[in-house]
Image 1: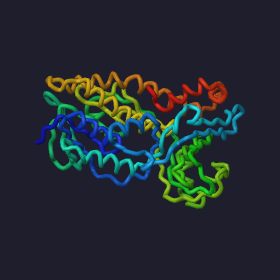
Image 2: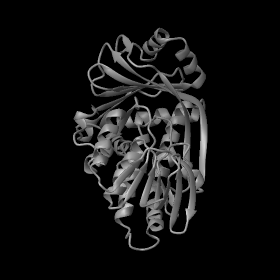
Image 3: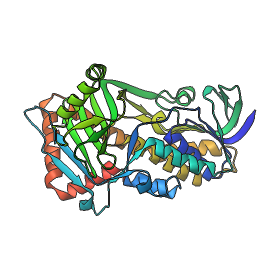
Length: 385
């Protein structure tokens, strides 16, 4: 049996960032992270998230890892009676070099792992969690390699199906959508530059995110059966579908990676921390990939976990319980606000109700015409607090 101040469960980017943050708080930390295949996806991280990565020592130079996002272009491609205007958000208007950066997840993982390797008080166990039992003064965790860990603080970063969340008794609300997301990498005839382009259709957005030169990352949200059918008909059919969805604005398209499909759902919890257990990343929240909030919100979780640990003395017997309560209070407002924003954005795009379409169209007209409102939208979208 091994005793640790803290155990972080989950090997994704949020789990890696949390393990580094907890160890940097001075706690003897075990990171439970089973081996996983290389993550071929990308993450669009807004400027506050990139600033946190730099401050936390997780990324030295964003330009060496990712591609800057300087503009966001929204095109209403629906056939509805009330259509929103084409809207362009430019980072220069907000006095920023970029709204954020588009990072390959594999490159971020390498950078996070390098930061992790420099911490002598952080040990990694390549196993998965199989049992979770509250004990006096903390939690006992049993792993797939039959090892047992006792810890005062447990950080659950083990994703949507979080065993930590379920075993610790956190109440979660989950809603599944008929929509799914198809993702792959593309080569375009004409480059996007620094502009992320969102074509809004009835069943979800078709988004091209710049990845440098003529490369782009695609996130296509549509009815799950539509996506499965398109995927099953082969690369040439997908190529023609992509040309149609992109309105041929960027010329010819070449698929450079296989297409993968992910079902969409939302997950929310009443509280993100209690009784010496905290939840970060998709263990605490999950949204459709709209508004670029997924990993951005997860990194804000980690930043608030760092702040909660800094505000808590570890000398008392109940320090982990206190830290989890501080963390929960710090996260409550951001989780509620971001969850409401993303849910409203996604449902307003899907709804056939005329009043909702009017509100969405009017909102985009207001953002297009009113600079002060647009500035507020910049801050909300980037997660500025």
